[in-house]
Image 1: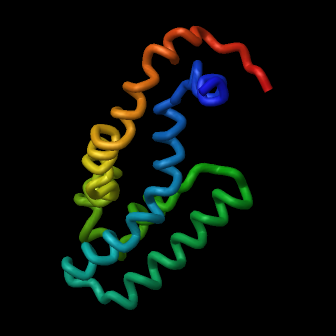
Image 2: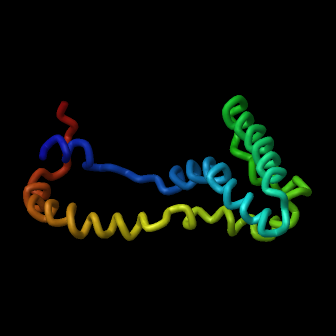
Image 3: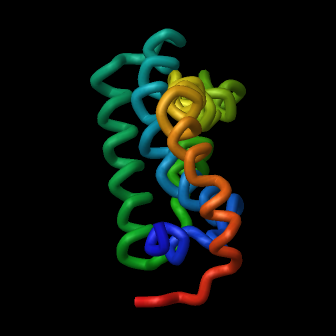
Length: 135
């Protein structure tokens, strides 16, 4: 109990850091959605895949070798081939479309598994007060 308290007391989550990291990977995650949208708009799947592959490798090199931000979306916007989906690109990059049932599953887990156990120790945790790190 004391170890858990030492680890978690004062835990801080930085939403902007998380958002930045998600946005760095999101363009790569969305490539399949981009390909499907292009095919639906009349594009050739093989050609689209090749265009995405080349642009993804270029963007990946910028991130890995130069330490810069992921610019895959900008590359797609600058490529005439992808013009048919430019107007829906932001929708294809909506991070919330990649999480499926995760929020509901987390809520169910907390309600059924975690909260009952936490409730048993709430008073003990309060009694511990603010923690000094003890290793």
